Amino acid sequence: MAKKYIVAEYTSGKDVIERLQEEMQKKIKGTEVIDFAFGTYTMPVTRRKYAVGIAVVNIPQEKKSFEDLSIEERRAILRKALELFGWNPKTLNISEIARLFNVSRDSIYNDIEQILKEKEAI
Image (cartoon, rainbow, N blue to C red):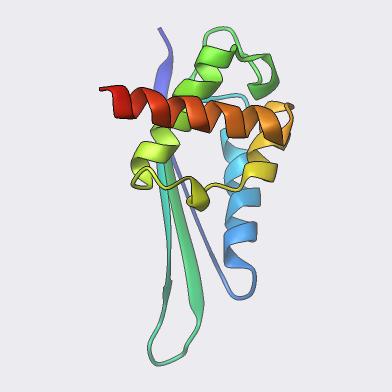
C-alpha cells in the first residue's frame, strides 16, 4: 500500500506560475499525483502577485516515473487534471505535460480528445 501525503508550495514576484511548476515538480518527482490544484492572487495594496499550489500524492511501493506509465495511467492523471480545471483543456500546458510523460504533444492532444469523448458518452 502506498503512503499518501500533501505537497504545498507558493511563490511570489515575476513568473509565479513557472516558478511554482518548477518547485512542485521537484517535490512530487517519483510520486503518484492523486489530486492537485493551484491558483494565483494579487495583493491589492502592494500589487505583488502570488501563486499557490497543493498536491495530494502517493509514494508508490515500486517507484515508477511518468515516462513509464501506461496510456491508461497517463489518461487517468490527465482526466483528473481536466476535472479539477472544469474540463477546459486550454488550462493545461500541453508542451510541459508531453515533456513530463516523455511523449509527443500529439499523444497528449489525442489523450485529451479521448477523455473528453468518454466524458460526453457518460
